[in-house]
Image (tube, rainbow, N blue to C red; front, side, top):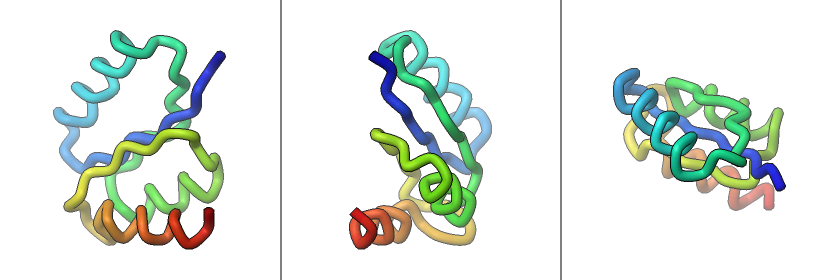
Length: 75
């Protein structure tokens, strides 16, 4: 069974590491978006409504904590 995942990380190297680690540890996970900032993370969540979200706490535009607050208000 596939699980949809969003990974939001503004550091390119860390984003790639997370994507690689997730692919190894959880191959059935389907990454639907990997945005580089909080605003794009929020937009991606609205578009895909992934089941699992990994958010950097400090990102340009909107922090991961702000994104999580918005998700919580929608759920």
